[in-house]
Length: 129
Image (tube, rainbow, N blue to C red; front, side, top):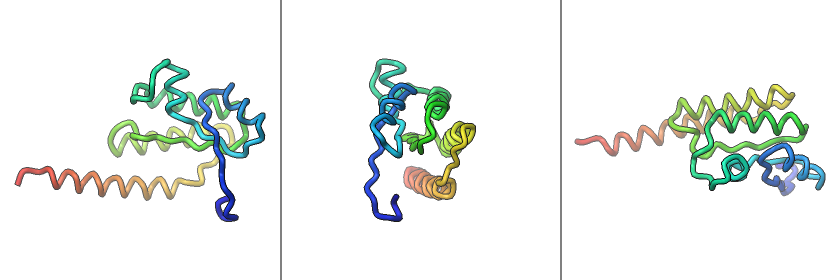
């Protein structure tokens, strides 16, 4: 789609039911919204209260009911760089279990490297001289 210059509309889904509703509208790509997961799971706004495990479980439950491409965010990465790596791998494993392959692994690695550089730069700026 991107290569063809097409606009991509990816409605936010947060559980199997919202996924089926979005699919019934004929969408091609879905986006799992952290805010929606937080609201449906905890009845609270997205303030980092949903755990990594709960997010991976939600990815898994959504992938069980759809064959569509699912975009999943990880705003904070659940902590530092090691947590970001674990989150990416956990999401990929959850999707792969249902036949979905991540086409963004090399992009994630690039983002991890960029995050590492930014984190090191911040640390170096805040060191007492």
